[in-house]
Amino acid sequence: MTILTFSLILLVGAYVAGLLGSLTGLGGGVVIIPLLTLVFGVDLRYAIGAALLASIATSSGSASAYVKEGITNIRLGMFLEIATTIGAVLGALIAVYTPTNTIAILFGAVLMFSAAMTLRKKNQEVLTEGSNLSYLLKLNSTYPTKDGEVAYKLTNVGAGFSMMTVAGVLSGLLGIGSGALKVLAMDTAMRIPFKVSTTTSNFMIGVTAAASAVVYLQRGYMDPGLAFPVILGVLGGSFTGSKLLMRMNPQTLRYIFCIAITFVALQMMYNGIQHKF
Image (cartoon, rainbow, N blue to C red; front, side, top):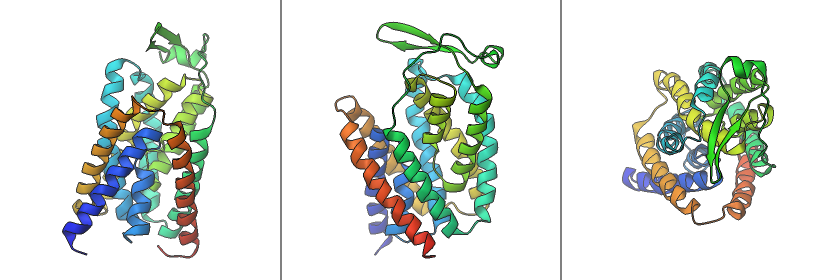
């Protein structure tokens, strides 16, 4: 296979990854890493490096729209980024010294967790009374709806902060945005409305990935030949997905995609156990 053919196939694969990621909310990394490792036989650490760059690009593009609409809680996102950034650097450092087979097994387990979290019931309740820490840090805010601005309060700030550290470690270790765990922390632990938690998570993913990417760059795990078509493809797919999302109900697609990534997760875990990475 020539380099041009490889790049074109990778571009198309990344486009599909970005499209599915934007429609299902799971991000492109969950597709990009299995595509590079299982289909093309790329070293897992180089695949993670390319996926991190793709996460930065897609987060930067899509998060700006939500910030402009006033849905994202920027103050909360920046506060929680302290935890995820520390965790991401730790995770990236751990990944350098962890066998790739172990990383593959863990990646498969996190994929299955992400699929389960995608199908769970979402929190739509709005708390009218927050914790003392939420008032002290001025994290309570409002978000726009068709009926006007809705005020919401936060609780369990410490628990959410701790879960964000774990999300950061997994992001640095596996090269994914850990959006499922971030949303779980804000949605379930801190009781933030689902719309706010997903957009704030999207805002955070790029910053978390950037912290991990620095470590991978210093270790030489960033290959421009992989990163360039992956970034272009994922960006194009995300843009198309954001347009399609306005005209279709993605619930059926979400079920199909969750089944598909569960299959991929089992493949990653099986190959990891068989030491095929």
